[in-house]
Length: 279
Ligand code: NDP
Image 1 (cartoon, helix red, strand yellow):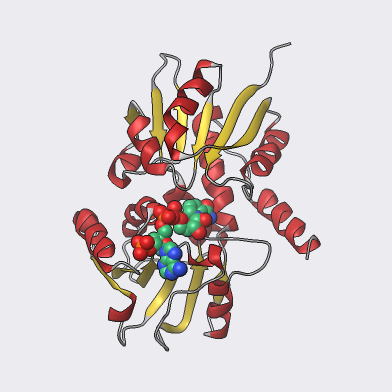
Image 2: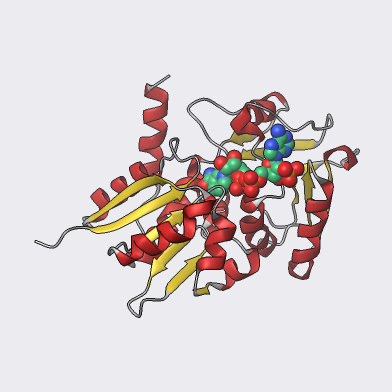
């Protein structure tokens, strides 16, 4: 019997990763024979580890913090969405030995917002907090939804301005610091900072969330994140973390590798039950 095809997620740190659990559930659901492991890979050894993994028969990799920009550089060729974002979270070894790079974060977020949470982004004012690798991957897909404006606010304002500049050909976008946010208000606030991971929250002005507005934290954990709680206290209609996005981006990676897209709802439900059970 053939050994199962091998996949893995590389990151640093990686201990918290739910990706092995998600891909095991996808494999069970679709009947695909595969293994998926998590490996702690620091940036210094990333390229060697990727080349070794593929040389030893590995078929595909996910790359997470802080490796997405390095993964972009390693790919021999990339999808259009990855090309623009300059960040890659999915690598696939093609039959000719070339390494293909894609970024499934954006489509994962958009599916969670528009399909799972049934939100329309068209003509909405959106605020994106953070200007790191995750923001790079989601700005293009967010602008494709035709919001009336996308504001990026970041602790280091220059990085927000730089991102706005890079993506301004795709739609109405501007960049600033948290302290420049002033009296403007938004229909949707997305937190793509790493603040939640440290149990922190960016300092946001009062009344920044419009009535019936929504909050979405890309970070996720066993407990509601500080930003999810902030959204609840600010009266958000919906205030959720990024577990749905995580499953959706994984489903798109699975599609790139295996040519089939698993059902995501049952997997999101399992993960939510598992974290409720552990509280
Ligand atoms: P990066 O390290 O590339 O970027 C981090 C960003 O957070 C920067 O903008 C940084 O600001 C900001 N930041 C860090 N600490 C603080 C703080 N204490 N207060 C305010 N801002 C802060 O990380 P990523 O962009 O890759 O990831 C961001 C988040 O998104 C993480 O929580 C990650 O887990 C999550 N994520 C979730 C996914 C999902 O599928 N649900 C997918 C991808 C990411 P500065 O520029 O000033 O340093």
